[in-house]
Length: 193
Image 1: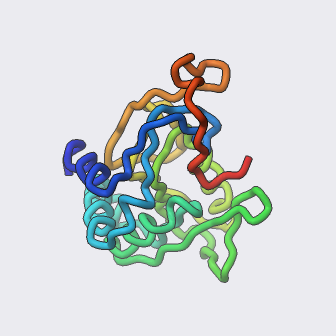
Image 2 (image 1 turned 135 degrees about the horizontal axis):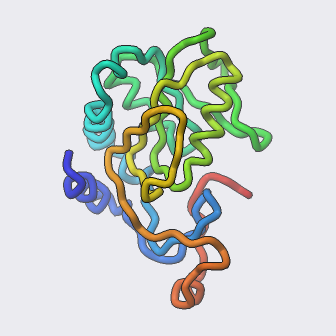
């Protein structure tokens, strides 16, 4: 899938939003990708997941034993990537503010894991989820996301494969342009802090 085709999927599902958004990373943006909307259609979610899987080199795909995603945003795309790879998919969640495995999910020691996200802005959620995977004994061998909006700044200790890279500007609290600051803030992400 090309970048235009991916953006077409977001536009078709009204998932590319404009306004003043406080992202779960803590940064501000005039654009927000509501991946839940683009993934609410199972056929579209399957197409995007298959395209994402094809971005990952075959030698890495063949090693993946499990897919793990951070809740909430990564759950649907993680499930679809697991389906496309033919492996189990599970998620980590933050009941007390720190990612952990629950609901009977777990990993065997050394089990090779693909971490799957919906959108990466700073990579913080991905790194936190990788910590939970390591604590459980799993080994993250690669990370993937539908969208990388970090501008290449998200750094992981493993190869990272986004389906598309979008460089909508984001701003720290003290960098928000006046015209954006004048717009009411919407906090669409899954974090409460």
